[in-house]
Image (cartoon, rainbow over all chains, first blue to last red; front, top):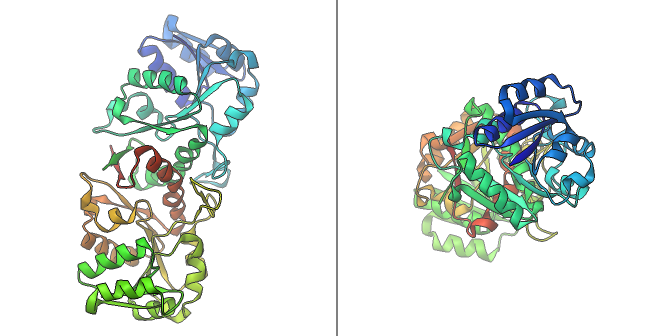
Length: 216
Length: 216
């Protein structure tokens, strides 16, 4: 599958490299066509990796990943031709972390709304699935690096889109019983607000290389 | 130890009964001295259980539990004589859930503040420790009912108070490696905002009889 990945930071690079590793082709999109990080990544990915603008990544991808910083995500998606989102699964892994006040960051949207909902409202023809935002990107892409059963949440209005995303998560190494479908896109408020706990657990644990599991 | 428990709902009753079970004496406090739920609970607890007003519970308790509904907690504590809080450990297990808009509830305070901080600011001479709010009360009081290692968070400004609370958690059945000290009382924002995820996990799992563990 050809997948468009918006974002050239560590999340975008880690997701893109994992997608290439499991056999997909990726166009990494950024604000400008000549972004050096995207070009360097594409060179490292060989014939499965391309770099382009946000609009080019969205055009070429059959499925899209939003790996931009959460506070920049709406602007990044505004740079895309709306027709290139039509009917496509848009996997939103971003968190609207506002670090302008120092660590720990606050959320720029929470409680009565979420970034996932904002993206779905701004682009109603896209099929937005919020997932993977509750862990660092190494764990997102390589879940078996952790020594036990842990969980990933899915929120979205379209059941078929969530099924498509689930299949991709299985390719990453996630197990079926590790996926928790929370419901429609409004449920993204839960995993997004969990970030306020995650950043403080990160501080207490001294590492981001963890995730939560459900104990019953 | 004589412990004052503010709140007569299912959380207050479960915590109070567990405290009695492990050998403590409890005064369950409520808005009025003749609250029937508190009287019934005290009768069931025998010579270790008493019922009274919020003020009486705070006066008699050497350590205090806030088990009131989060949106009523500040008012409940306002009914207490300030001198009866002086230097005492006040364990805040409440969540400021606003269900007026239906399920799932929103938080009435979050992101830039928390109930734990509001209580500490309103009662600076109390030593507030936020803990146990991230699970249902059966799991709070009987952690070994779940089949695995799971975690409880502590937030508070006073290290000695957190050590006192830790000892009480061990009496409940918590294991030392299951306690995560997040830091000062501002870190209560994390466990409180996690509730937005908890209520949606509750919906997806179909039971509140679970907790999260940390997988590394």
